[in-house]
Length: 87
Image 1 (cartoon, rainbow, N blue to C red):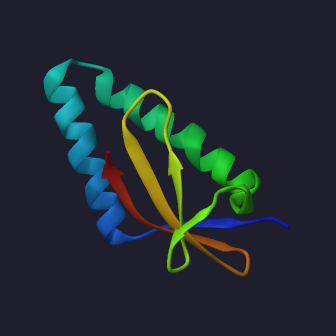
Image 2 (cartoon, rainbow, N blue to C red; image 1 turned 120 degrees about the vertical axis):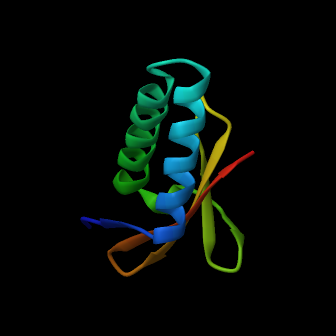
């Protein structure tokens, strides 16, 4: 099954805030953060059901190089990212 990724406005704000914070720490670090998220989104899209439901219907993918959890819900063929939290 092919999945479609949708990112909520709240999750977009989380991503922008983290990007700006990392860029403030070191130029280019925000870009690395975004690349890490892109890889995570591709893994989620390839098989979202390998990630355990943590609460209600929300699954979480924890990124490798940056301490963030991508919180998402799978409904049909849509993956809705509801938050990207710093852990």
